[in-house]
Length: 168
Length: 126
Image 1 (cartoon, each protein chain N blue to C red):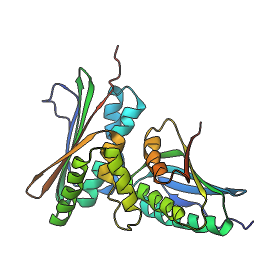
Image 2: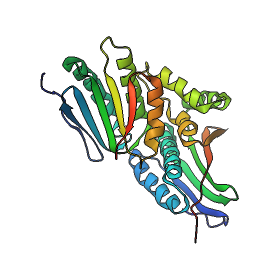
Image 3: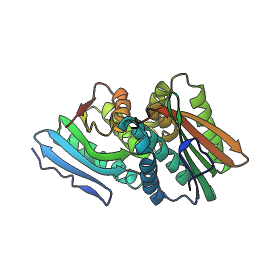
Image 4: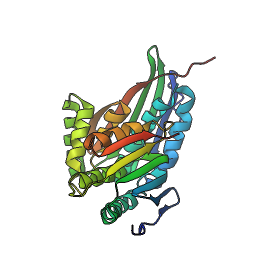
């Protein structure tokens, strides 16, 4: 699971799996156990785990086919820790179009918290899916969320900074 | 005042336990509000609203001290509940009691408070 080729990384995890709902809790615990020794405070870990949870739920809910991927990368920089989460899953055309629409709107929003608040107000009257999970990542985790597509694969990347725990 | 008709719900990993003290209903949430909890919370908050109206409650307090996480679907259930109270002829206050050692709570609940600043309060409990 750990990519030993990335010597700069404090944590580098690559997981290919068939996503199931009951795997989210254990994977979240694994992310916590791997990252906690390197993060300076509970807030940084909490933000990372929120993003990891929402990304993992996203692939459990919406991936088609058997394979999905989850990547975690934590690297020390001069300014602190760089934290990157990435998921890759196949999506049906309807879901792909919906995801692109949501992610494009998110990218265009000048203020992720104001955009999130607007989505929350809009979601109040809807009884279908929440539609809040991805927008929650930049608003509450303070991580930048990007996407790319490769045919019917959707690739989501959340990236942000955290304070590094002092050593010695 | 009538007796409380709400009962505790949940199972392994997630529970909600209600207690009525005068005109304040306290809901103690325990565990993780993940995909398994979504339908429970969604249905329960509808019952809470009906009960609050029936009993003429002044406040419903949600004690999150032992709630380790809440996903966006569970969060959405709270959005719908708050919006229902906001648009109701009979309103009551909603208080969230948070655990300072779980930093996600304040971030998530601030978003709920912004939805109805005149109805929702956030308090920290030791």
